[in-house]
Amino acid sequence: MKEKFLVLLMGIFIAITPFTTSVSADEQGDNTTIQFTEQFVEIRTTASLIEPYCHVEDLKRGTFDVDASNPVWKAYTNEEMKGEEPNHIIMKKGDYWYAGYSIEYADGTFELGSERTLNYNDLKNKKPIKQVHTYYALSSKATIKYLYESENGERELLYEEVKQGIHKQAWPNVLDYKGDKFYLNWDYVKDYNVLSPSFLSEPDAVDQMGPYSIYSGERITNVYLREPIIRVLFKDESGKIIREQVLVRDLHGKKFEYDAPEIEGYKIKGENHISATFDRDEYLQNITLTYVVDDKQPVDPVKPVDPVKPIDPAEPVDPVKPVETVKPTIKEMSQTKTLPNTGVNNHTVLIGIGIASVGLVALTLNLLSKQNKEETKKD
Image (cartoon, rainbow, N blue to C red; front, side, top):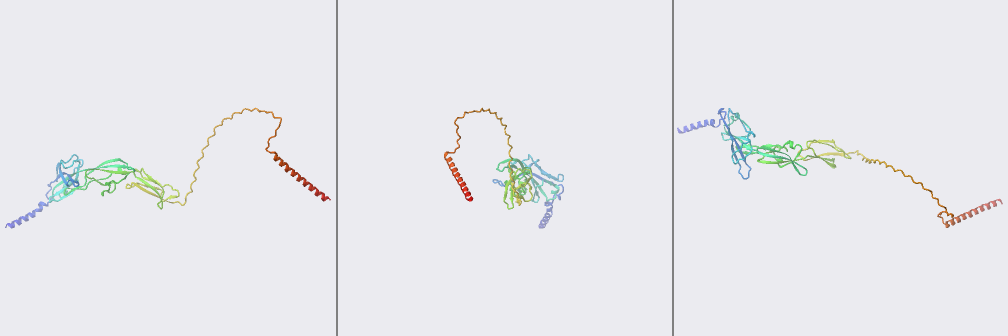
């Protein structure tokens, strides 16, 4: 008899168990109240000298009840959290921002999320809820310094800004926050090439603008900016340099425009006008202009002769002063007249007389010879 009673009692217990442990809030009626406990949370998982821990402390504002008459819960905004700080000595002081919630069900399971608004009508259709915890975590600051770096390595601070957010952190059944991200300020970098500090290599970054992660604590990140330079190269079809390169600077906010110059003995291959925008990933961007040999090589032009400078007009000549009249001077001639010296001596005269005498004799003999011949003919 006793055993039958125990079996009957066990059957009744099994029959009523679903109604006491698995009944949803809706099945329990619209009068069900879901309690929200709002708390500060601090999770440390990377400190070298301290064991990982998760510490929570209730906000001074206490709990928040959600029911049919008060159906919506909303997380406090960052502005509303100003001035709210934990009293516990272990927890850091600073700005605490909403990080997420944890729903604890009656069956001992948990659901984590980060929505900033929860609605009673959605919650009551879930499994029976024991309570809901909402967490506010300490925010971190990232100071971004935009520094211009010249070609010789000198640096100058151009801009500075502070990004704030919650770093990535997680704790079982409590929080699973993915971490806030930030982007570089486009207005600060659009006219420069961004060099690559270490944080730019993180896997989350799609490009140089971001997104980049917020890390625990306060961190300063330097972003080095360099003036973009386009280098124009002049080559023939074989790749040989045929003219000195041209470096084009001062491209801040400007479109690059360039006309291919004439090179003696060559002509441009393709368009002689190029336009481009600088590549943000390349500090020095190369543009190559290709030339081909010009079959009709122009004759070297004659260098122009420097024009002759006009001759300065001669200065007026001073008039010649009249010369005084010279009175003639008459000298008395000597009674003995001396012939002028001709430069011929007596020896020369004698030779001349001898030659003349010989000629005279020859002429006389010739005449006599002719006379004798005439007389002979007469006889």
